[in-house]
Length: 97
Picture (cartoon, one colour):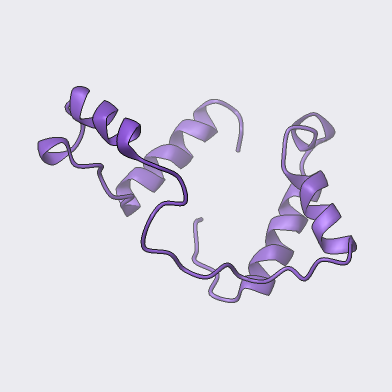
């Protein structure tokens, strides 16, 4: 099941444990090594500040959404619970979960 984990430290702990528990072939294709560097280095891992905008320019992405007629009136759709369920279902069908 999908659940929201409010505490960032708990989320990092669960994420690490889940990645480490994967079979070797899948584990090699994850962000586990980067996470281990952050956790065991001199880095302080803390929750990022929430943002209301993108870190990168989105003009090309928004233009592609409009050109593909995705979403209402070419507006980039929001991530909804239904789309998350679809993504998880697709990942299961691909054998990735």
